[in-house]
Image (cartoon, rainbow, N blue to C red; front, side, top):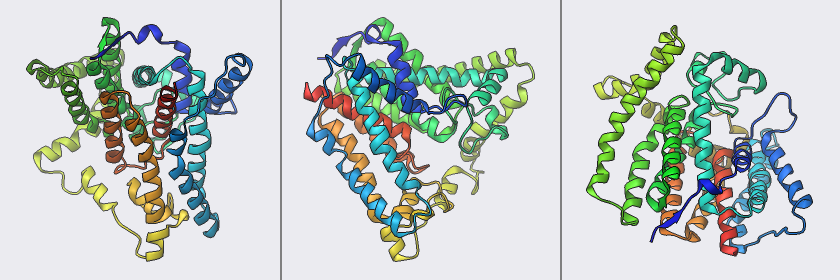
Length: 421
């Protein structure tokens, strides 16, 4: 039987922004700490000072054991980094960040959000994705706002301020734009499919979720093409969850007709709105269309040659020639070898042994939430989130990115609290 609830009534605006600043770890030029550390310190202080009389630190052995393989990976990474002269400690710093700041912070937030369950967490994440989509569009459509954001928030990543694509590959309340942002926003499509199929939503909740989904797609449009790969995955998840919850009927297939038609109409609406506000923006629109669609049209016409993304990614797949390097890795190779493929970069940096430890450790977190999920729907959602991670790791090292590690750590500890209860 589907759960009937109203998520919006339980939502606190403060919680939305605490999660936003924790996950996206924003750095302002006028503040010495990134927002994630500030949120962690603030929540911990509030727990000790304001809630000391009712403070309960939850503990579930299986949840903490889920991180054990990652601890082994940290020890392994420490060893090979020291043996290789500690010239490049990026991997070591990353796993320390995951285990201490991200996992520790996620636990503190799960205690601070004492009345929120895992479903409410996912709803808050969906709201955050919608907010970011709106801010990304504002960044694109209002140059003055974009320039203001350059002043207060330094731009990071490969899309720099002097890069022409920064005009249409914009950012929200975050440090960068690009494939990682697009891929992360796309997880909101899976969460939206989960809510639309697995609950008896109030009319208000349904409208808010659909509103967020629209802005998530807008956010993907102006950050990176990687997120577009999620659309068929999200549709597959949507119909899978409909079947699981006995809500599938032939009318539900009409979405496959409405979605492309609605997308085209919405695109022209956005385009005309932009040209109305920016009459000289035709050049930018054409540049964006060329970036977004030329590759697809070339593939469709069979004229893409070797320039398409798949061919480029395939050229990035290669392995170390030296057996010791292949087996144990070389941390100094991180960021040096000419490939973006996450799996290859991990093998070069930590070897097959380290890569197995890392990916097994990360997948263990997803399997933990799946095995302790209250419903089949939440288990299926986690399965699709893991599938998405496995797909996009082929594009960049996404498993180790703080957007994704923060989210799965939050899910583990919010779920742990429910199991404990």
